[in-house]
Length: 297
Image 1: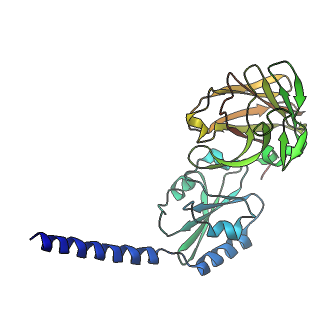
Image 2: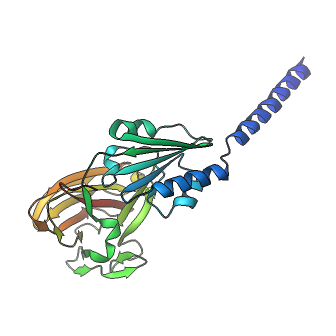
Image 3: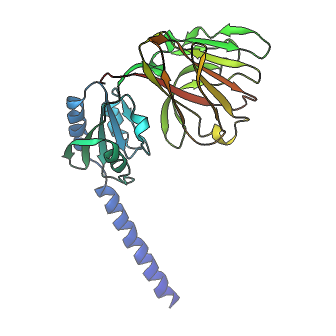
């Protein structure tokens, strides 16, 4: 009896293995499908467009379109898309695809077109007019000013540029300001690394003069790894000249904390100031956009 039971279990296991193997093979996306979809997206791409890929682990799209603005998120909200005019959602019917991005997109964007290329579907969404991005911190590292005010009272500029980063004079291995793509809230975020100075110090990041009215869209968070072990929260202040536009203490937890403020006056310098009571493991990243009011993307 036991032999018969064992034989049945073995047979079922073999059948399940064969079925699973066949299913996996059926779910492998063909290079020709990826080539055709990439050619379509590239031909339709315009300034202000963003390519979003689901599932996130498929590297074939990035290999073909990685020179264009491209994200591989695990979730989307409207505020993530400030500064973009359209989204090309590339969905790949393969293992790991669960279609979680199309629903949120359809709630805050109008679907413009859909094209299918075998296992690859490209849906293009038109976003509501949000204004034109006139400043993106990630793109302006060479044009910003960074001042490190150390706990001992010494104030020094972080003016050495190395590999596209502004490096601070002390603790330069991690004390720098530069673009990174890191896991913040269980998904990759394109942000600017800005590890704060130790207790009693301030890290100040200043934009060039920004002309005209605009809305500041900022967001900050600890990397996923640091969100469980950073020694203390980080307090962030947004300023225009000497006027404080907003302040928030970012807790040591998983999350991408957003701040929105209006840039008053006809022009101004926007500044970010960071402080903490203990900068141990404060692997901190942020973003800052200024969007001009009353102008299209």
